[in-house]
Image (tube, rainbow, N blue to C red; front, side):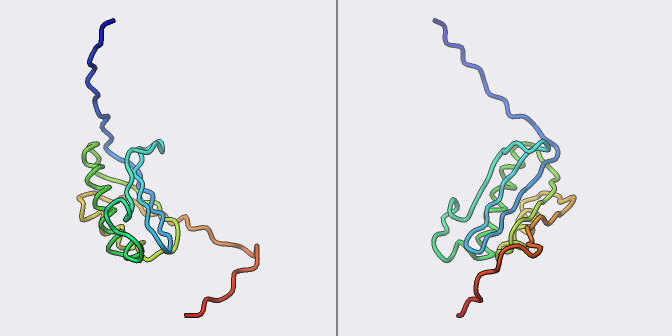
Length: 126
């Protein structure tokens, strides 16, 4: 049996999509190719933030910068951003992508909004 060592080559994508899921307790940033296949992802927990610090805008920015770094390894220069959710890391994540050296061509907000539907949960008292 011969073992051939085949060198893996990374595919190069000039454009891609970044999906930002901004939850109240976390921010998940996913990088995909134009077809929607996941190439890389990052979250505050993967970058050393634990507990209440995960839900800060700064944690979302760091996660976006890590994804931008991974995107440049794939040869990506411009991305489309798709936002979901109403978390605190929402706007800062876009700034993190720009700081990472990516050009943002479009921003789409796909946050789900109920039209009637179920009764909302009670108002939170703080």
